[in-house]
Length: 352
Image (cartoon, rainbow, N blue to C red; front, side, top):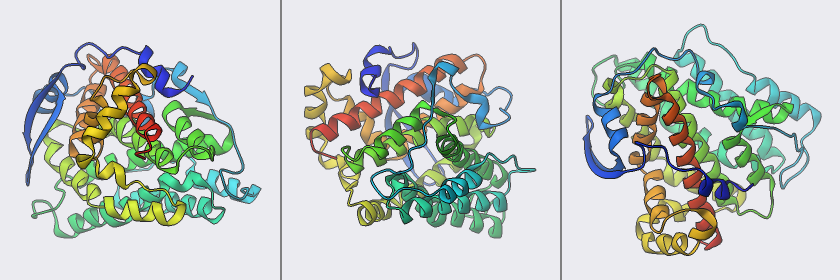
């Protein structure tokens, strides 16, 4: 069943479906967004349970896992057995002795090499990795290196670097674990299986395939990383600093994706100027996607700025608390499904 059809069959979880406007301050900016009242309360005042041991601790039920296949080509030349073996080696799950900047740098290099292998074969499974590598090399790692050099408390730095490296490592490992399962025939989480299927289908526009990767990364894996890294509301301001640095790479991601695969992601970043058109497309497609008129506009605007990451932050706090973990799992999945349905509708309307 297509993901967009699934969305119509999965009701939003109680407590996560009513939207209201909130203003949340960070150290350097004030963020105004539309977000769930329950999730905002989680960000501002809820406690968290025992920190989870790893990102794998917050996987969805087994029914949500799809057995992976190993296509040797995705709209390019076939990967060689040596290519597949190297990708499997680079992406193999690795348990660090401690979450440190050197370990994160090592895993980022592994992800970058995987992208290069895919690119060497013109394989579209690199289309998300292009942006991921830019974010790691141009935003996350420079921010963490400068924070390490300056020490805690310095302006424009991350004060709790052990937490930040744990968060970023677990986020990156979500993707690497999915790649490993994909190239070894293992069980791939559904949000990444959907990405691999779109990237491997040459009839699917590259923009949609790429955004499916960002949706998996930012909607599902980021929430899980917030949970598994032991994040508390006290880290919210630093979290926004990280997210802000990542958001600054939007133009580079658009340019890099265009250069490698002639896929234009710019419409998503420019959706502030196309909001009415997005609403019109999703309204017309409501019957097939299950998205209410206007929801595509709201979801995709939030995906393009820090507001969406705030939802993932709140989801992560809820995932880490045994009292709210079950509805949070459902809400994370529903958010992913709805965002994908909006992307699919925009693609059908030739806006992506």
